[in-house]
Every structure is written in C-alpha cells, then in structure tokens.
Image (cartoon, rainbow, N blue to C red; front, side, top):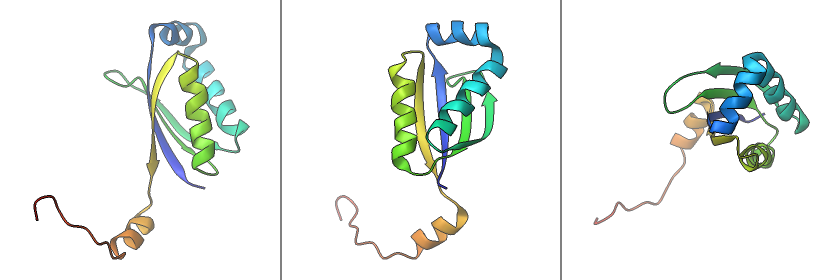
Length: 106
C-alpha cells in the first residue's frame, strides 16, 4: 500500500478538542478515519512549532488519502498537508527513467 505522511496543525477549535480528548483520543480518531478508507496508521507523533502532529500511514491509493484529507480539512479544526512517501526502490526506478527536460534559459 502507498505510504503517506500527514503534517497537521490545529486551529483554535481543534486545539480545544485536543485538550478535551487528549492524545489518546485523537490517536483513536485518526486510526478510525484511516480504517474507514481501508488504510492503516503506522505512527503518530505530536510536536510543537509550525506543525502539531505528524502521521505516517498506509492508504490503498491516492484517492483514499485525498478523501481523508478532504474530510479533515472540511472540519475546520485542522490544517493538513498530505505528502506521498516513496521507497528507496521506487527512487531507484525513477532514477533510471529517461526524462526529456530543458532547464530554464538553456
């Protein structure tokens, strides 16, 4: 299954919910939303700074990851970026592909 990283920051409303539910409550909610589209969460880390939480998970496809992103964003409680993660083997394949590219000004 494709792997994704979700970096998220809570709005004021979302932070109030985190304070109410605690980290364990949010983990349960994140695991439930992933499972609802056939995904699985590998890890969740809370942080401080620009991002409040990092989630690494597997989703069946891009559409499933996008569906979660849309639902989370529509809640208004979280702003999230979903980043597809590539394996070393996928980069090896990509590095061997022939690409016709001209840099700007060349």
